[in-house]
Image (cartoon, rainbow, N blue to C red; front, side, top):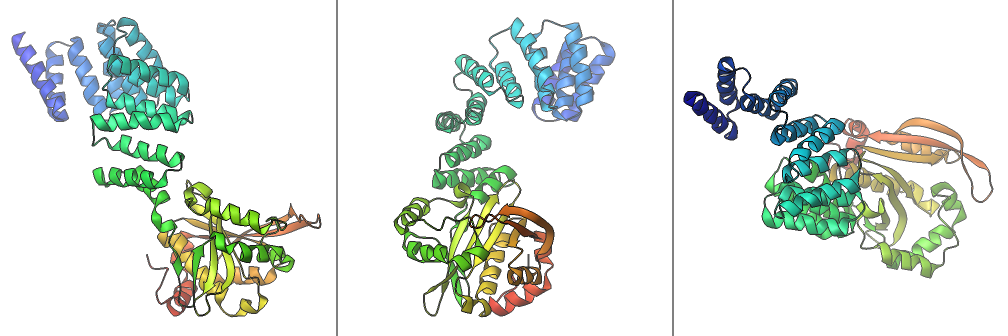
Length: 424
């Protein structure tokens, strides 16, 4: 028996050091001699769970539990393996059974909270994490998970305090660092959020979630778009007079966007611009630019990305030049090339849509000529707010793949911008 005990201890050491193959071999050797030894069956189950061999893990957990049904640790570890398999309901059941034998298990309460969160039972999940923290106040994972539950309950302000506590205890806790960034982003504290996402990437350069989150708040969303003859900068309060003039131009707005209120007072428009000036596009879900000519410094038009969907990496594109004499000067084309470069290279969206009123045949012809694909023709799709008539809409789209293989954009950008924007 002493030899078996020594072998079991060596298996534990192998398992704790990540030498799973060696640990499994020792356990199987013990099982050959003593088939029903519950601790060995349990350790094998843990090894199989850690190496993602869940069917074997489940089998051995059940064998161990059958031999020692009152072992709270067996039940709790099996609950964790079930949770890793996405079996939240079964995980809750085994957590409850484990806690019935020993209610003072912070780890099991943490597992239970995570299972409840998968079920979107966020309030009861938060209570489980709080119970875990009463037993172990300095438990980083429970602190982080309580923060996650609070975020799901739209309480990012309180969540921040728990993420901060988790990081005080474990400063390399990359998930807590990323989650803290997300909570700060939810509160509009974009600069702080950016710093935490960046730090999470420094801790783990391959952490895809932090990389995506950082891309969404990156400062490169805010920088001007610099062309040869013109540049685009974001709206400022000083643009209120120009925008007010554009919005009062019925002919222009009929083709550009019929749903922008034309009766806004200039002072109201200026107040809105002041309010949104310092907001990041991840908050507004839009980017709005004035097109400015380099030679004169005069405003020539407006352009927008709207309905930005960061989850699906897509947006809708609008551009308009109120002066008809500018339509044949290449202004819209150069501005559009700058925006395509911005969309597909700088902020790395996957798709750009351009919806065109059917009556604006000039714009639709140019849209298709540039490489957008007509994906739909929506008959009587929206109502003209002025006349009450139903309007038809061309639905056009360009994907990243379309953009990368577009020879016309490649040639045009070389000539008009000085570089091939389609090159990866």
